[in-house]
Image (tube, rainbow, N blue to C red; front, side, top):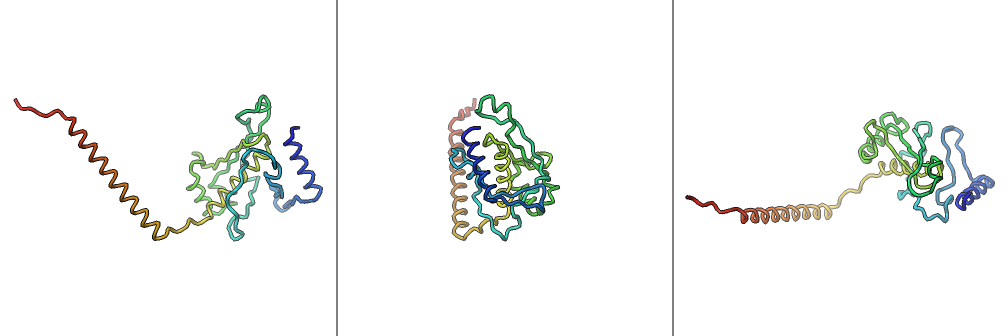
Length: 201
């Protein structure tokens, strides 16, 4: 076991000893933990995924994701790592079908399909992958956190444009149109100058 693995195990043992892990027995197929990726890898140089959004308690999503509603598969990760990479399946492929995801509201499913259409395949599955670390559990935690951030981002209302920003946008569009017409006129003059003059016999 490498240094990071030993450190991860030490954090887990300390949290179990102090009973800082909180389980939700009503939801058998999922769990909630007080651990974070930063606590598991406090000295890691890897850029672990951390959400930039601070959840609002009044939002329609509380962060719970039913694990039995997800299709999770593991495969070999790419990148450096020697033969160990070829022997273990640490890459996580997490997906679920948006149309049948009844654990999400219709509003969230519609916005997910619109905002993240590049992550929805032709069968209607939202696909999230993670091969950030060489740990299967940490990659799964990373993929789940990405999914939570995506869901929360659909519930944030975009700021309304101010009159100043609208006027600035209108002026930029006018300037772009004038520049386009100016360049078009220059190209037309260049083409006309290249024409061979027509002579009559």
